[in-house]
Length: 158
Length: 161
View 1: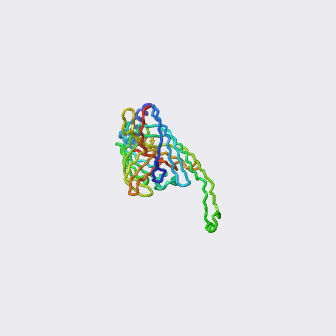
View 2: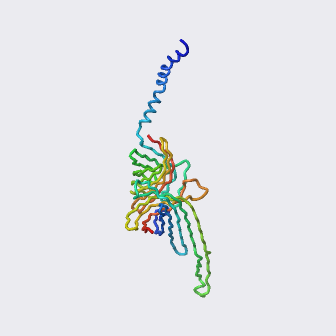
């Protein structure tokens, strides 16, 4: 997963493919550093299109919904004062309140995918997808933000 | 000579006169009919690219150079894309019912520099001499600093020669 800054982060997900070819995917990733936890979930549905003259490569168009949550835990910072050295109980505490920010956006899915190998109901595939979201409702169309996904998929026919 | 006879005489003269006056138009019409079914198309597209700087991409009104892309699609469906971002890319286009997919390679350009890489695009184009075109193009390049990613969602118009 890349979010427009050329930095790729590890992501995991599950994909369902209907007999008609329609795709449903849920992807999740996140990271934690100190009191800050980031979590992102992307839910998308797409229709493969045979645009590349064969079944090996397909184009995908669809709809994508993203939910991003950033949470900062409450922290207590203990500042030592000069009195601490004299008396162990003389400390001043600074408490930062917990913060939680959650945002949801809906956008479009564009991409290509290709089947690498298939044997006895097991399929290995790869995809290169862009989940493109408008940055807000008050902006001019075409101004976008993107989450880029490079995936390797292993699928089983049920 | 009654008025019917005068009409008979006038008819060939009128035809000759019309042929003289409209000959250039008729030649043009014949040339247009005789041209090959698929010809070279030049497309100008506009829309803000994402140049790998993080965040959303701003919109420029009127479109700046970085928002502009020129594509040339030959009769053999070779595609030449020239833009500041995602870069200078050459590939092959596949058409199906107005929709198309294309892929190829070239110089991928982002804010952090340029690198050699590949691209894939999907789009929609109307038929006719003057075409409406909508295109989403994504590219990944490899540079000394690592992977470069850029994309552009653009709309524009094409003219088929």
